[in-house]
Image (cartoon, rainbow, N blue to C red; front, side, top):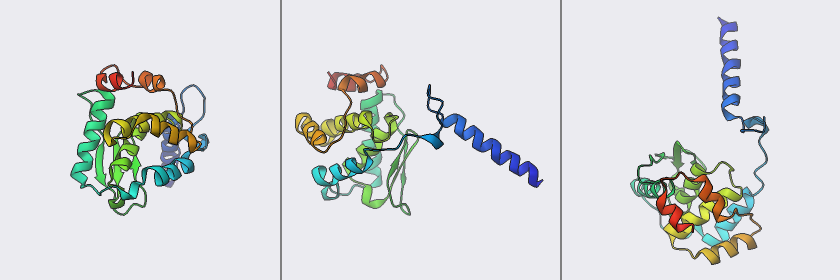
Length: 180
């Protein structure tokens, strides 16, 4: 019985790594590239966006913003990720399937940050920064030019708008028009 459990565990790890393999590179999740912009992005959020100064939202309001953001990014019929109460967690976390929001993180810029994670594959890389900037412009009222200037001044790399356009599904008409 013990040997069977051991084999199942090894097979489970193997399946997980196969699912997490980065397409075309042969690398797995265990060998991911370091997230070099992460600290700079968080510093940018603290300094430029003043995230904690934004009003705290209810979990229902956060779900509403996630739904609107995903309809913008992926089209009107897009199924947004589940938004869960992240109490007991230190950090917010977002993916295409689920967004966890502890109480402190229930602010619009944080919600949009986690939405950007759900539509981009590069953690805090240039494509993520582009998606985040577009969401901040459309939903938080920032000026695109000022925000892009601040992003570059913070030393963050940002993908061209066309790169995000290529990533989005054809049904995302609102996002496509905004990105032109």
